Length: 138
Image (tube, rainbow, N blue to C red):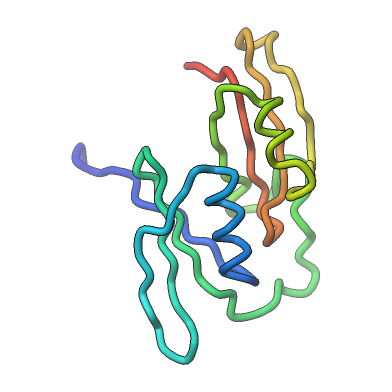
């Protein structure tokens, strides 16, 4: 499986246009393809310059009763905890996003582990947690 590459993350969205605008405005994605599904429904593929894809679907139901809202750095039960992106300047990213997203945790400074590593977690329009980091290295 040495030829395997990461393909995409699929998100179920309450409002496709609002979610698309969020990721294109603040994370550098652009619309790469739309697949019409009929009955005023579609799949929207977003891509960024590193060929990372987000696949946006219209949600077909409500969050199951009793499922807690995502908080802090994301759910700690089985499933996806958060999406994560690296930026050169976390303070500039936070300022640019402004009130368009709720901060759920941070910004935190992890310089004790990796010099210059800072991270903040926010919610996207559908309540998914998105991590934004500066300075992380292996």
